[in-house]
Image 1 (spheres, rainbow, N blue to C red):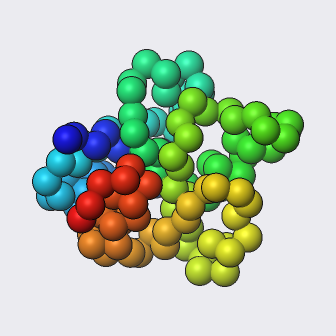
Image 2 (image 1 turned 30 degrees about the vertical axis):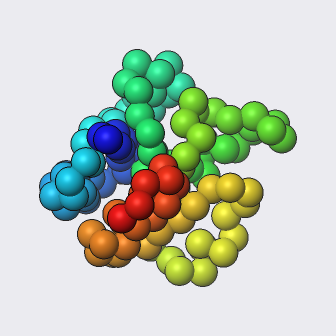
Length: 118
């Protein structure tokens, strides 16, 4: 089973490095979403299983959203953060991971969200 992962982050160098690292995991396919056209319409064009997004981008997208609404059509989202304390402040079913985490940590969290055994 192939898991399609989209990465959206303001730092394109980080995105490319994360893509390279995650594509080393068997069964992972990674696409990069440019922040400049990070819209629900753009995301709908590429079917994805998991969205990895920068914390600042996540915060800007959720601003103004009413309760129960989702800006993007992806239910499985992992927020990429630099601060371990921020992980605890994310609401609801949104997951978070430190940007500096290793391949194993990313793979485990992605597989857990997609219900695939590591």
